[in-house]
Image 1 (spheres, rainbow, N blue to C red):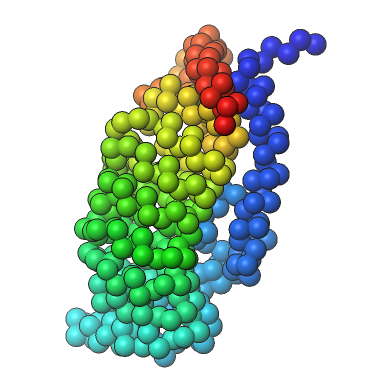
Image 2 (cartoon, rainbow, N blue to C red; image 1 turned 90 degrees about the vertical axis):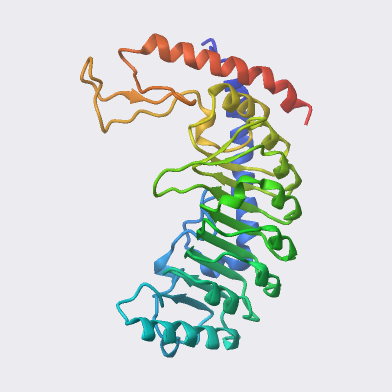
Length: 339
């Protein structure tokens, strides 16, 4: 039987087969010392902060300091309550007073809106390794330099937070997730974060507002990075190709808002990277039917502005797109072979 697959498809299938085992093993090795926090279902695509409530990650939320049970994990919901303004203020003040003294706590979640005072107080915790902030009103992270042992950090929607350079003073930082922070439009701050193994930068996912950066070039300094997520995030120059220089990158998540030529180029340059969009066409979606034939065989071609197509009615168009994508990717295989 003649193999009719194009060069890129054959190369990518081979690269995926060779690397998938190594990807999972590398992930397991990285997280081995933290496995007690994670479920048995460990996947390379999972964020460090992936919710595993059956493993108390995060634990059940509490409102008052008196509810703390002495464990190494703490999930605080002390704002956005029904309390009167005065009582609410006292509650926050009580947490600000007690947090620096909780020496056993290594991981903290703020599951309600965190203010500046709470953030400054948590930075004084001596054993802090991980901090998850769902969303906040903080405007400065200057005090984060006091949290020298911080390894895992998630800061949810905090539009006014700036600057981000203090992150470079965290010698142990390995995992960073930033969401809906306008200052992320300038990625120069990541040049200092050479110890990162996981990075997520996103715009406002709730209202689907994309964050735009000039270029991904500053990320080329992150040579230990193996996991990268760029949700609701776009670049204006240089496309995706700077990511090809990240030699240890194994898992990539991007939005389908890039020109298919840019995605194809990176797919060809780095066929070893696991990314859903490195295929010319998505899998079949059966939750809606083709308006022409009524069959539920809809697929979405990779690339900005591409419209849904029916496998039956649009077979010729789908194949044309597939051929164009694979042709571009094959051209960049030469770059890949020289790495």
